[in-house]
Amino acid sequence: MKKIDFLVIKSFIGPFILTTCVVVFIFLMRFLMLYFNDFVGKDLGYDIFAKLFVYFSLITVPISLPLATLLASLMCFGNLGEHSELTAIKASGIPISRVLLPTLIFALGVSIFSFWFNNKVSPWANLKGYSLLYDVKTTKVTLNIKDGIFYGELPGYKIKVLKKYPDGKTLKGVTIYNHTTNEGNINVTLADSGKMYTMMDNNYLVFELYNGINYMDYRNNPGGNYNETQFVKNSFKKNRLVFALESFGMKRTDESQFKYHEYMKDVSDLSKQVDSIHKEIAMSKKVQLGSMDQFYNHHLKKIIKDTSSKRIILPGKWVDKRMNTLHEDSKLMESFETAFQQAKSVQDHYKTNVDIQKSKIKDANRADVERWHKYTMAFACFVMFLIGSSLGSIIKKGGFGMPVLLSITFFILMYVLMQLGDKYAKESIWYVIVGVWMPDTVLLGFGIYFLYKATNDARLFDSDIYDVYLDKFKVFLNKKFKKKSQLETT
Image (cartoon, rainbow, N blue to C red; front, side):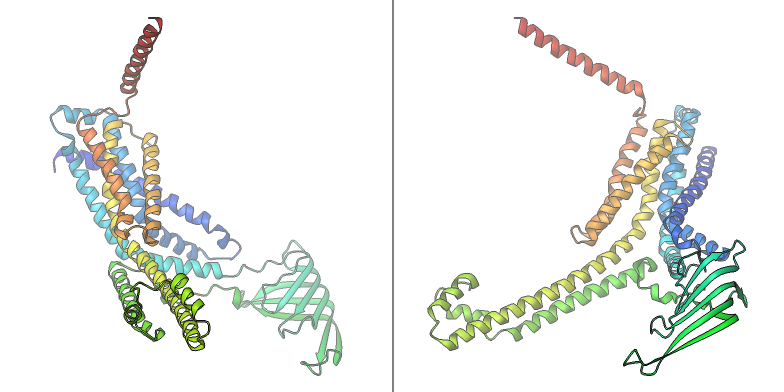
């Protein structure tokens, strides 16, 4: 490796690692803010948070790599240009294409790594991450009884406390409704005070109640008369109620239940899914066409052959006209009514099958879009490198100022085009291959244009260039106004 290659690679790898970590952290914070309410008050352990952060950090890598590549290339070549190193290299007779060669090879390696990561690691991380997130979201909030508010998270019970003291254990004015029998408020416990605590590794909740009364109604005939009841009243100085807290613990769901989603599959599995859905659609069309004969008493060719006009039968004209002239023939009228009912059945059957096929086509398009994204996200790294390296050598500004602004601009453009293309592809408005490759194609055009400008030492971001064009435009306008004034005076 030549010294110039070592210089460029060294200038690129540092910003690339830094920007990758920064971008992954930003997307991870976005995830944390998006699901923040699902984490609050559930007493999740540090191991659960660590697993979630690791899994979702891996999930954000494919979308982070293009932005990190763009930002790193802008910073690398911007710093080289800002410190006149790029100018010295060009002055020695080395073209910009030769300067870009080592980092271009590195960017191709990043693209290959991105494809492998998106195809192998991302499905596994998606399966682990989203299954764990589902379990976290379905976990109940930890026990949090507030003053004067009924608490109903304990299965079969409603509990209200008038006052909960700062120690979190001592209670005053406790009311407990027992609804385990699903027969209404027939079992009520009132207590003047009490204590609340857990035991056996927080698996059970204990209420020690003092100076209270338990009211209970016993029905002799549960399905009949409500007046046939026995009312029981029990007073106590101390009573102990124990509740199991097993419903509050987080339970892991079988991960195989999430493997149906496209995010959990690699390219081979997605290809099999797309092919199987298209085979199902073709088979359903074949079966549908074969089953249509049962709705007809006559074939269409015979109907057309028997008519004197040799024209296609229109229900609104020919049939109505024939029916108006044949009211006296009851058998023929019954035949026409039967024909209309059969036509309605055919229409309903056809609409139902069309809706089913549209749903299957959308499923196939979603799987096909996700399959192509394995390639498009990898190719986006290379495209972003072309844009970033070319713009960096043109603007000659390093740091996090101008590079960050340009990076965000092109990333937003890529994201908007990707969302638009995916939407049209999934709805069959565009071909899938057109929709998914549209963002990379548009950005590749920008990359080739900026590379051409960088090769020719264009000064796209120098204000004096645009001042010259503005002065020429002002001179042109002044000449126009002078000619116009001279014509008006003559």
